[in-house]
Image (cartoon, rainbow, N blue to C red; front, side, top):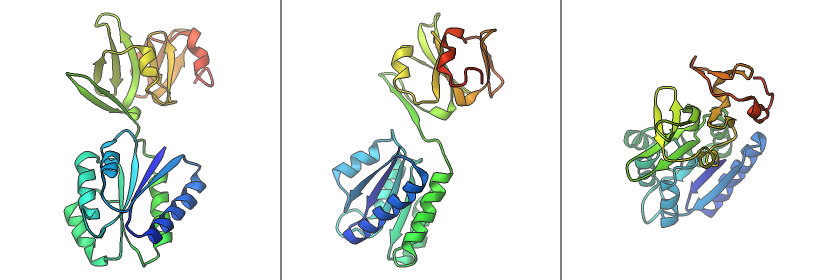
Length: 238
């Protein structure tokens, strides 16, 4: 799911941007939502603070009274370094100011210079990167954990620690959750292959059901693979 956040005080340009988004995303068959704002608001602030979904911000710089698009982008970057930011403005002389004050801006588009074609081109580039921004979130009184799904290799129940363990390529995290609980918080790439193990199938090179192990793209071999869960993997073999 992609969320497009438009901050533009002109209804005319809001409509143009929405049409470009609809046209572009129609070609890709991605799921998406569009949120529109004419100025900074508490609702926009809540959207910025919600880092559970990857967003593409399309911001006008000059929004009249209240915070400018540049100030809104600074707030975004204080919280969120993953979502993309595209500036659309009629002030071409602000180009240097934007890049001097902000990091990681995807594009700067002038409103009256091929806006529609340039915006479509930039959106297609963002989508074609196929970057994986999904994250697993966990928080309690002691820790706050945010892990990209793509970095998780497998999850298992440690009977000695009596904890759930999330393994990544270079680390592990112990949580107070059950296999059933965490399975509801993961996406479709995660499959249960043992009563005590869920694996990221995108990170697996080999499932050996007869010998009861799987091998990850890191080279790690894990003896948590049960024939009774073989049906959870689409081709059964891999």
